[in-house]
Length: 115
Image (cartoon, rainbow, N blue to C red; front, side, top):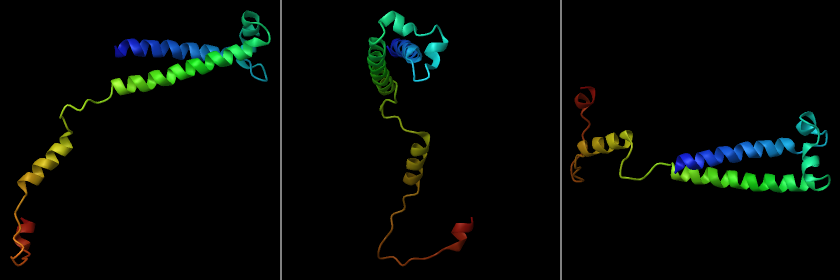
């Protein structure tokens, strides 16, 4: 399922790139370089910019939605597995648990630290 969504996401990306390059900027941009006003010829003179901007908005929305959907589907699954570091820290804390008697005097044993 994720492979299919990534394939659709790739197609939307390619279409989005193509539609953006077909739009003419103020200096006629790349659309004038490659075939000169192809969008105006295919879609009509005045409505070409309007239609291309609507298609761009829809494709961008689909791109973002698919990206979020794919990331949530392929993210980590909480199946009780934790990282090795957390597991080692928990094991270490369990081994080093020494009950402290609050009525006992505190004694610093330097020999224990240096060993």
